[in-house]
Image 1 (cartoon, helix red, strand yellow):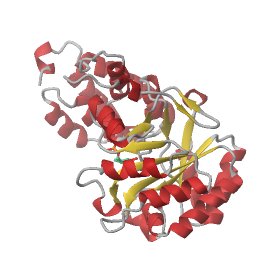
Image 2 (cartoon, protein in one colour; image 1 turned 180 degrees about the horizontal axis):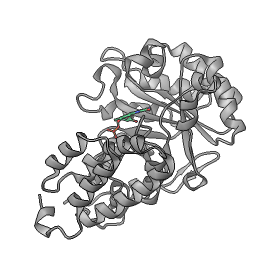
Image 3 (cartoon, helix red, strand yellow; image 1 turned 90 degrees about the vertical axis):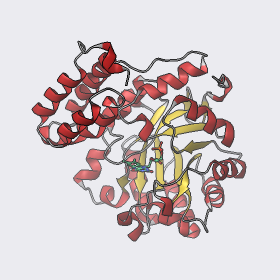
Length: 340
Ligand SMILES: Cc1cc2nc3c(=O)[nH]c(=O)nc-3n(C[C@H](O)[C@H](O)[C@H](O)COP(=O)(O)O)c2cc1C
């Protein structure tokens, strides 16, 4: 096996934050909530991004937006991700978060879903560079903490303008940008384009760039960093139900190799995850629904996982899901079940 270049894993220095390494947890609606962020940090992620929060919802005092902002001093630094399209509203939302002590705010310019696009938010902002500039300017004007922007490669094949948008972001005061190497029209299809990420790195030498897309194994992080020259990597789906990925990358940089987690180890971490979730989801139904998002990944590769997933997906009953999990991950299971 090729020996990874350990120097690719390194700290990131920003004006107000110093990240001990360059592995970060991606913003994921419905997924990168406080329990998952805390768990990712325990496994070595340098920081995490919240689920995306509506700037308008926040300004109007919506309960949902509030819940998404749940945080803990144990996860600092954390970036609060906002979405929206109106400069004034984004500026006000930043001022509110600043008043409440937020130290890092991220702008969502990557989300491809129609609900966002219809309102000119998410990756739709990449089609309107002037509006994007005005939004970032308004955010910068009312917020003195760390400001970052997350984008895609561009809108579609004909408009791969991430380097231009990154230059605008940096000029308006963003201190870090993340690039998911797919266009909006690709959604999650195809492979992320590393070349466009490399071009963004070259376009904004004054600020760090995080490369994002399809890091699901430790070696992918080294490949992405080497091929793009990015300062760090952001990991989303590859860390969902798999916090070990952060520890495994750090271990690989030290020349070691972490074995695949056993069923027993997975169960131990799953219990920890559920413990953290109990504090964030007092309601059993909500907890059950959120838990289901991670169980597929926790069970991946173990024999009987497909049946376990089917059963879990048929239920919204927390007690039953916990029972199924106990049975499936039973530490007394035979070692041969872990080989698959
Ligand atoms: C379930 C899910 C929710 C997501 N929600 C957000 C979001 O709220 N804000 C955002 O900027 N990106 C969001 N993304 C995109 C991820 O941050 C990331 O860019 C994308 O998944 C590619 O990285 P990955 O291959 O490591 O998952 C989401 C992705 C997934 C799978």
